[in-house]
Length: 138
Image 1 (cartoon, rainbow, N blue to C red):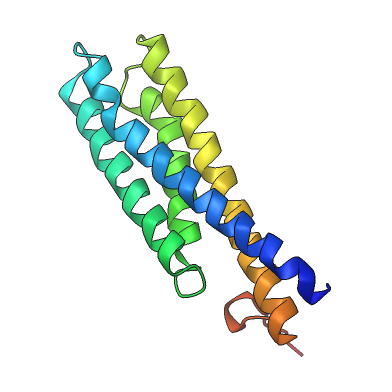
Image 2 (cartoon, rainbow, N blue to C red; image 1 turned 90 degrees about the vertical axis):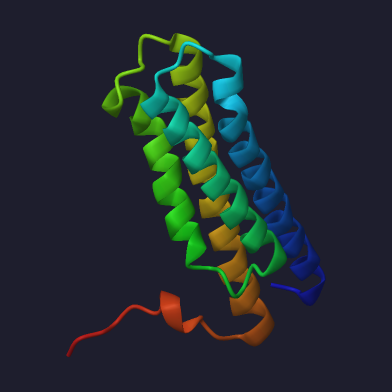
């Protein structure tokens, strides 16, 4: 990759991290718009939303030092997709669909951000980051 394309990769990492922060804030605020949501569901949304927002903010501020957080964000996004069914609030279709859509977006954003970060490191240093090297057995 040409050095001139590196800023595009950095912009991609930044944009996906900003969207992750916004998605976390949105999920954390969801219980305000669904007052009849169970306490388990509301607590899950607030805790997960705050976690997503904080981890997204860390990824925004230090993308190369927090690459492993992309995995945690992916797991949190998967939880957002599963939570309506696990916690039994699928009967609130608006909240359930909100969680599923935002969860899928968080998984996508964290994946794109991680891929862009790996690409940036690979193309600026010419080396594959140690955390992404596959172990070869002989």
